[in-house]
Image (tube, rainbow, N blue to C red):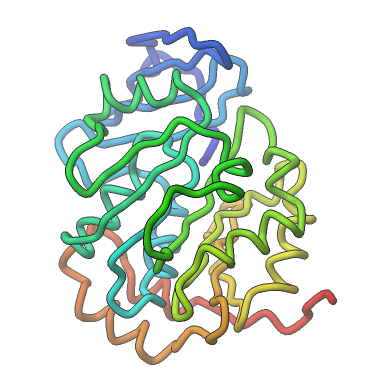
Length: 261
């Protein structure tokens, strides 16, 4: 997520009023964008009008690079929908991947479907639910090989998602060799608490900083450390699948040494 100017190219195309919030869909140059009406200009997602894999957000490359810690994932969970960038990017990397998406805000789900082409389909399930409640009572099924956390409202990380119990429950949903990936916007309230829990709980915790942004992408395993050499090999092999510099992002990943008990 990033801030955007409210200039002449940001004319609102649609306003969707939901029970939780009002979201706006607007144009910014060659991109269609999504934001909360009261979110202070924070962009929840954008998508290029002619390239459906160009989402124009700097943190998505590190998120995809971190997901390469999973060797051959079959099931993924995305907590937070936005414009549907991560489900689409993950399935571009692994076309047979089954993805569950959890989004609390029905207005966001409606906007993603109407204006960004992100709708439920075979292999893609979209669940309207609170992320904290979902991880307490997930639907029956196999464990997840990849879990991606990217949940923000207009101004903060929801408090329930900054608790140690939430991180423990996320790890309980992972397969033994699975990877948890979290986008932490350090300028948002609650980010420091979440980073502390990730440092303490993730096996082999690593961070990919996002250049010129306050985001840091954390990743690590439930019981295994990420294999940096294998990730680098996958980045090379998958380089042509996405318009993202996966190789450079993998190379910037660094281990977290100062862990909190």
